[in-house]
Image (cartoon, rainbow, N blue to C red; front, side):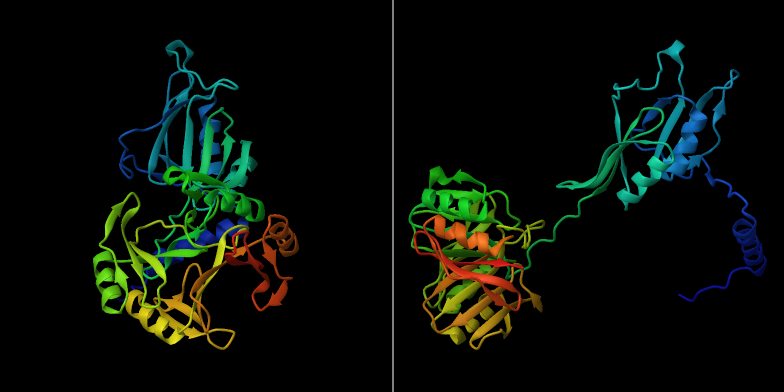
Length: 399
C-alpha cells in the first residue's frame, strides 16, 4: 500500500493549530466523541458522585478518559447524566440525588471497585494522584499483574492495573518437570527445605512432595536411587514414544495424568526420563533463590547421547566451556531451564540451584548432613558442588 500525501490545506491548518498551542500556550480543547462512537457493554457502571463537573474533569485529567457527548444539565443545575470512555468501555455518572436514594459512597463505605486496565499503571496512578486522587495502595507486582489503587475525589475506588502476561508454554524438547529422586522423601524434604528454602506439600500418599514456591515445576519422589528425574515436553506423546523405541530406548504406552498425557521412557544408556505433551502457560526457569538454574546430563558415551536426544527431542548442541561438555539447544535457542550434556562419567542428572549467598548456602548444606566443596568462581557466577544427605549430587550457584 502506498502512503498518501495529506491534503495541503488540512496540513497547514493542523500545523498552525499546533504552533498556536505550543508557542502561545493555548489550552487544548477536550476531544468529545459522538454517543455512538463506542458501543455500550452488556454491563455499564453508573456512578453517583459529588460535584459531577469536577469528577468529569478528574476522570479526563487524572485517568485519561474521553467525554462521550455532552452532560445533561437539570433545571437545578445538577448533572443528571454524563458519560465518559475509558479504553473501549463506557462509564455513566450523575450528581447525587438524595431524594431518589442516590448518593456517592461515604467515607469508608465504598461498595464498588472499578478495575481500569492500562499499559503503564505506575504512570496512571501518579497522574491520578497529581489530579487529586488519594493513593490507597501503591503500585506493586502480584501473580495477577501489576497495579495500584486510588480513591477518586468522590470516593470511588479504582484498581489501576496491567494484567500479567501469560508465560509462554514450554517448547517441545524443553524440561517441563524435574524431581529429586531419593530413598527417603521425608528426609529429602527436610534437607532441601533447610538448604534452599523450599516449601512443599505431600503428594502420592506421602511418597512424594510438590515444591510450591519455585518458578519451575519441581518435586521430590521417594523409594528411588538418588538422581534427578527429568520430564521433557513434546508436541505429540505417541510420536515421541515411537521415536524413543526407534532410537534404541524403551517407552511405556502413554497414560493420562491430571497434568496431561505422559509416557515413562529409558534411553539407550539406561537413563530414565518421561515425555509429556506441552501446554500453554508452563512456568519457565528463573534465577530466584531456590529455583532450578541449570541441569547437567552426564553420560559414559556423549556422542551416543547426542544422537539419541537429537533424534527423540530434536536437540541441537554447541560446544560448552569445558572439553566434552555440550550446551543443549532447543528450536535454535537456549533451553529453559538451560541444560548441558557431559561425557566420560556414569549416567546422572545433576541440578544446579540458585542461591542468594553462596557461602551461607554451603554452610547450610554441611549443617544439614550433606557435603559441599568450597565455592569457586566460574564464568557465570560462583558455584559449589554438593551432595545431599543421601549422596545425590547437585550444585549451588550465586549469580
